[in-house]
Structure formats: structure tokens, C-alpha cells
Amino acid sequence: MAHFTYKATTADGKTVNGKLEAVDRSAAINSLYKEQLKPVSLAITSEKRSGGFDINSLLGNNRVKSQDLVIFTRQLSTMVSAGVPLLRSLGSLQSQTESAGLKLILADVLRDVQGGTSLGDAFAKHPKAFNDVYVNMVRAGEAAGILEEILKRVAAQQERNASIRKKVKGAMTYPMVLVFITVGAFFVLMLFVIPKIGGIIKDLGGPNADLPALTKGMLAISGFLQSYWYIVIGGSILFFILFRRYIATDKGKEQFHAAILKVPAVGPIIKKVAVARFARTFASLMGAGVSVLEALKVTGRAIGNRSYEKALQDAANQVQNGKQLSECLSGSSLFPAIVPQMLAVGEETGQTDTVLVKVADFYEEEVNVAIDGISGVIEPVMIVLMGGMVGVIAVSVLGPISSISQNIK
Image (tube, rainbow, N blue to C red; front, side, top):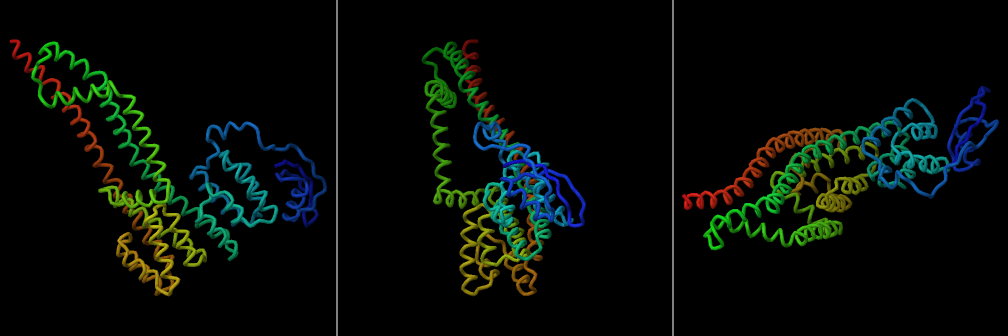
């Protein structure tokens, strides 16, 4: 990509100066004409060369954060609604964004749009930043001539998804920290504390001292970890790697997603998140004018759970054969009864997207309540588990010491 400074005249004869970024001189001239500017002079100022060492790529700074994408979408919607030409909007946002990854992507998008590619197709070339839902809604907005309205919907949906994701991550952070602390404390006690106390017990009671079964078990675990710690750590790492590889396969992913829906306390929350995401995504696509079959296909992938994706694919096949969507989902255990009931109302009134937005609002509120509830329960449970672990170790150690002390007296 090259940077140019230009001097051009507008349709009413005024002279304007500015800067732009394009692949080459020809693309820069075409960009000016598309903005109804007649170039007077055009000079290249700098050129961004590809290849070489990229510290941002090495550090992972090229990843586009959801918050950056939300801000970009909202700003693009505002600029398009205000009548700013699309190329100028993209160029302005590309130069202003603080995200290194988004800046690179928008440079490619701007180049493609300058070359005549539609905005939706340009976004589709960057699936890690713009998912299927985003791309399909933009394509539908371009086809219907309501791009600014669709961008507002996309921005609102991005904000909702980011809010739920942040809520779930926030609820999981504290339990994960407690689990890490618990596991770390267990290994520290077993590798450093128990062996020393075990040596004291053997010194006091002698090698033939009759120790309680709990104490023998703790000393045996400690001895095993001391002798084979590398096997435990290596085996744990190997298991984690193999597990990650397995759930990356189609079969493993299906089994893992089906199993996680059955986990107590966690499964119901995941179902509510999935239903809320289905309702809002499907409503947004339908409101944008996407066909039912395409909307079901895209929504299935957007939910992020293979069980729901398969259920929606089956529903799409039945809809293609003439059945109503509400009828297709009524027999599924993945969707609560309220979903097909509300869908039936929407199908009868022709307001499916409006009805599903209300369903999404309801289940997003349910998710918030459920997460707050489980967060309040996890803290005392984890404290009890940590206290129980320390208590078991204390009993296994202090019991024999007390008994030996009594014998000595």
C-alpha cells in the first residue's frame, strides 16, 4: 500500500487537498473519481512494503479484539448514515483505529473496495475478524440499499455478544484462580511439607510405627510425586495436548459440545447463552432480508456449539421440505418450549425478527441472573474444598504426631 497526497477540484469548482492510501497511482486516481473529485496533482509520499520482521505479529498484537470491532462498526454506521462516502469512511477509520490488526485488515478491505469488490465480499476475506453473521448481514444490507441500518443492527449485536462474553469470562475468572491456587497448594504441600513432617513422624515413632491409613496414603502420594514428578507433569501436559487435538476434530467437537450441555450448573447456562444467541442472530439476519435457509445455516455456525448447529441444520432441511420452523424446533430438547411458541406467533403475524428479539432479551437476562447466582455459590464451595484439603492433610499429619507424643509421655 502507498500513501499519496493530492490536490483536486470538486464538482462546484472548489480546490481541496488531502491524503489517501491506495495500491498504486491508478487506484488512487480511481478512488478520487469515485468520490467525485477531479485530480489536479497526485504525489506519492511513502510506501508500505510487505514482508520482513513484524514485531506486532510476533507479539500477537494483530489480533482484532471484539471491542475494537464494535467501535469500528458503530463508527462506520454513523459515518455512512451521515452521508460520508464509503471509501472515505473506511480510509478515515483505517487511519484512526488504534488496533494494529484492524488497521492492516482495513487497508486490505479499502484496497478491495477501491477495486470494485463489494463491502461484504471484502469483509469475507478476513473471517477471523468478520464472522459469517457479520458478512451476510452486510451483504444483505448492500443488496437492499439499507447498509447504514444494517450496520446499526450489526453494531448492536456485536455489543450484546461482547457483553455476554465478558459476563461469562468474568464469572469464570475467579473460580479458575481458586482452582489454580488449590492445585498449587496441593503440590507444594505434597512435595515440600509432607516429606519433612513424614520424616519427623518416622524419627519419633521408629521405622515400624503403626500409622493410620490416611497418613500412609498421604505419605505414599507424597513419595510418588517426589519420585515421579516429571511423569505427572509430563503426563498432564500430554493429556491436555491430546485432549485439545481430539476436540479440534469434528467427532471430538461434537462429543465435547454434547457432554458440556449435560454438566450440572454449567450446562443450563450454556443452553441459555446458546438460545439467546440463536434468537438474536436469527432475528438480525431475518430483519436484514436474509433467506430463512441461509439464516439458519449462518446462525448454526454462529452459536458455537455443534449440537445446536446440527439441530438447526436438520430444521433447515425440514423447512426446505415445507414445514414451519416453529414446528421443526418444537420437538428438540435443546430449545425451551417458549422458543417454538414465540416463533409460531412471529410466523403468523409476519414479525419473526421482532418476536425473537424479545426472546433474546429474556434469555440474556436469564443468563445474567444465572451467572450471578453461580458466582455466589462457587466462592464458598471452593473455599470449603480448599479448607477440606488442608484439613485432611492436617489430620493425617497431626494425628500420628499426637499419638506418638502421648506414648512418649
